[in-house]
Amino acid sequence: MAVYQVSPTKWTNRPPSEQQKKSGLSGPYIISDEMPATEQVNGVWYTSKRQYRAAGRRLGLTEVGDQNLNRKPKAYTPLSREACRDIVERSIAQWRAGWRPR
Image (cartoon, rainbow, N blue to C red; front, side, top):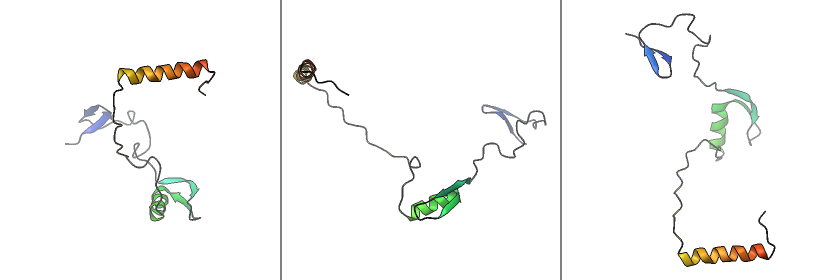
C-alpha cells in the first residue's frame, strides 16, 4: 500500500489528484547541483557544486558553513563581591575621566 504526503505533518493512502499538485516538478525538495560559474583558487571555473567542493578539499580549503564545529562552552567562573566592586569602581573612574567606549 502506498502512502502519500499531503503536507509536512499529514499523510494519506489516496494518491494526490492533479489539482492537489502544487508544482510540475518531479521532486520539489531536491537541491540542484548546478550553480553559477565560480572560480576556485586553482583558476578553474566550476558549475557543479560537487566538483567545486571536491577541488577545495583537494587544495586543503575549508568551506565556511559546511562543517559542524563542536566548540566547547566557555567556563563560567563567578566573580567575588570584591572583584565586582573593583570593576564597577574602575568603570566609574574611567567615565568621570572622560573615556567613552566606542
